Image (cartoon, rainbow, N blue to C red; front, side, top):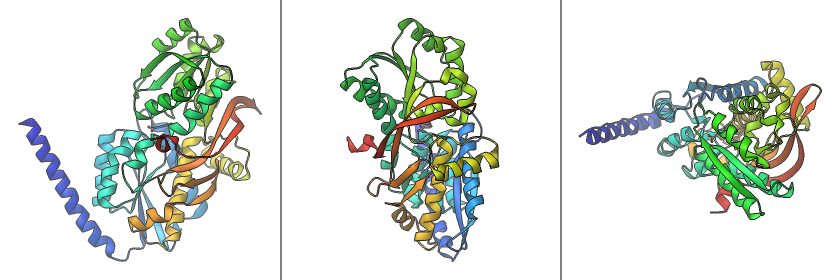
Length: 396
Ligand code: PHB
């Protein structure tokens, strides 16, 4: 009975979404001088610092490039989903049906990007993923385009690096949800193939993780290194507990994708972070002119440093602006996605492009080490892998 009631409710919601879509199509046929971008990001809850970075970066881009593109005024409608996919789905529906947005963007964690995918497909609205990093995301809708990264891109590379660096025994700590599982799988595939050994595996909840029991176990097990994936925003808390338990003095190194060493939080981690090697697509210290200007403008506007999350947002809004230029302001979803496919530009992270087949990002992955420069901690890049595609898809 309950199940039946629930499915009836679902059917009713789907019907009203479909009816809403019909009226959306009719009204958007009228010549409209505004492009509406529905930005769904976590502004509250445990992932709020990532929502803030995305919001900042988009504000900065609009400040620098103006709010008019191809003769249309860009209106950004920000909605907070607190990283809860139930909220995201409801908000995406409202944005599509009531606000009649032309583009959906943001998505701070994988479940929120996935929850929106069927709606993007049904409404034929592009979904620009600016942070979530699980490989399968772009396969869930032909309207999804990603400007962030995948965990496969960085975890394979750090797996190979660990072998070459002579690391033999690793214990892993990963967030217990899709990107954590990707990070673990791709790291292990490469590390074990190279002769490495994984001696312990621990998964922690995505929300409010307590790292203490794991850290205690690590002190006793004494692996050469810990492979850590926590999503952007959580690295500070991890390193605080790491230091409190004296692991910074234990000789056990932290390695992983660069999410744990987010530049946004790095300075607050203190000396415990020094020497940590990670693989990632962006460092605040990336030594290019484009990045130096980006970092200076971001610091000036927000009195803080941009991290990799900010760059995903900055490039995401750039992609939207450039696609609109290419379509001459046509907001048809298919036209916009076609315009985004194959687009290439120089990001603060280095050269990037959108793979025309997968709509996923192609970018350099850098291996970096935390060092102190001019009194601040930075991820200093020392090796570059050029134009890395999402290895999570190509290997299927
Ligand atoms: C994700 O949920 O896909 C995600 C979020 C933040 C990250 C990486 C992955 O830093």
